[in-house]
Length: 292
Length: 304
Image (tube, rainbow over all chains, first blue to last red; front, side):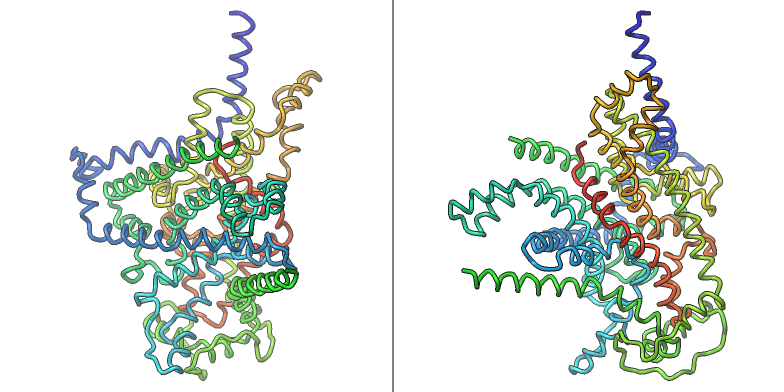
C-alpha cells in the first residue's frame, strides 16, 4: 500500500469518526425506522403481517377525515403563504426606508418569533370567544354574537396567529436579501432617472427573486406545521375547517393504527420531497442567474 | 420634491408604528394582565371561561365555585386598576404544579440544547472539512429531514421509542431532539466558509485533527454556536407536538402544553404563568437579538 492510499484511508477514518455520533443517531431515529414505516404501510396490520400492497394508500386517501384534513391544510396554505410573503416583504422594505427608530421596529417585528404561542394564546381566546371581546363590540353595534372559533372565520383566526408568529422570520430573510443588492446599481438607475417603481420592479425584485422563492417554500412548509396554534386555541378536537393534517395523525396515534399512520406519513413525505426538489432545482437556476 | 419625501417618510413611520402595535399587543396584554388580582381577572374575563368551567369541572383542582361578580361585557383591559403581584405569589407559593411543569420544560430543553450542539459540531466539522459522494448524499438527507414537518418525523420517532420502551419518558423526546439535523445544517454552512489556509497553517505547526477542531473551528464558530443555541432553545421551549404524542402522562407535560389547559382551570393565574413562561425567551432575545438575526440569515438559502 503506498503512502497516498494510506493517507486517504486515514482521512476517511477521521472524517467518519467526527460524523459518527450524529450519523448513527439520524440513522437510528429517522432513516432506518423510515424503511420500517414503508414496510408497515404495505401490511394489513403489524401482528398478522399480511401483505396488502397499496390497499392502505387507497383506504387512507378515501378516508373522509384524511380528505378534510388535507383540504383544510391546503386551503390554509393557499391563503397564508402569499400573505406571509407579501407582508414580510413589505415590512422589510419599510425598514429599508429612511424612517426613525428602525432598530426598535425591527426588534418589535421579530419579537413574536421568541414569544411562546402558549403564552399569548389566552389573548386570542379572550378576543374570539362566544362571550369574548370581539362579540362585545359586535353586540354593541347590534350584531349577533357567535362563537368565532366555530364559525367560517376560524381559518382567519388561525391565520392571524400564524402571521403574527412567522412574519418576523421572513422579514429578516428579506432584509438580508435587500442588503445584498449592490448599492451602485440603484445609484446608476437613479442617475438615469428611473423612478422608485421601476427600481423596485427591475432591480430589487430581480435580485430578491431567490429570497422570495426561498421564503415562499419555507412559509409553505411552516403552514403545514400549523397545529400547535390550533391545538393551543381549541384543544385536540377542533371544529370542522381547522382540522389539519397533524390532528389526523394525532388521532391515529391514539388508536395506534400503525399501517394508517405509516401510510399517511409516507404520502406526506412524498409530497414534501417533491416540494423540496422544486426548491433545489429553482435555487440552482436562480443562483446562477444572479451570479452572472 | 423635498416635501414629497417627508410625507413618504411620515407615512412609512406611521405604517411601521401600526404594525409594531399589532405585533406587541398580545405580549403586552399578557404581561399587563399578569399584574391584576385574580378577582379583577375574573371580573373582566370570567364570562369567557364560564361555560368551560361548568363543563370541565373535573379539571378544577379545588371544588369551590367562584362566585365573584362577572362583567358580562368582556373588554380587553391593559391597565390594571391596582398593580399587584398576587398572581405571581399564588403561582410561586400556592400552586406548585405550574412550577413543576416549568421544571419539566427545563428538563426537556436543556439536555437537547447541549447535546444537539455537541453532536452537531462534530458532524458539521466532518461535512465541512472532508468531501465525498456519500457525504454529499448524507448532507442532502439531513436537509430533507430538517424540512420535514412533524407529521412525518414523529412517526419514526414514535416507533423507535416504542421499541426501546422509552415511551412516556423524557428520553422519547430528548433522544430524537439531540439528533435533529437543524444545527448541523447551519453549522456546516458556516464552517464551509472557514478558509482552508487556516487548516494548512495549523498542520504545518503540527496540529492533529482534534487540535484543528477544538483550537480553530470551534473558536471561530463561537458566534454561530450562540445563534444556533438560541434558535434551538426557542423551538423546543415552544414544543407541543412531541409531548402530546410521546408522553401519555399529563404530569410530565412541559408548560407549553399545559398552558393550553390552564384557562379551563384557574384563569386568575393564567396570565402570570404565561408571563413566567415567556420571560426566559424575552430576556434571551433582548440580550442576543443580533445573534438570532445572524442565525436566521445563515439558515436562509439551502446551498453551502
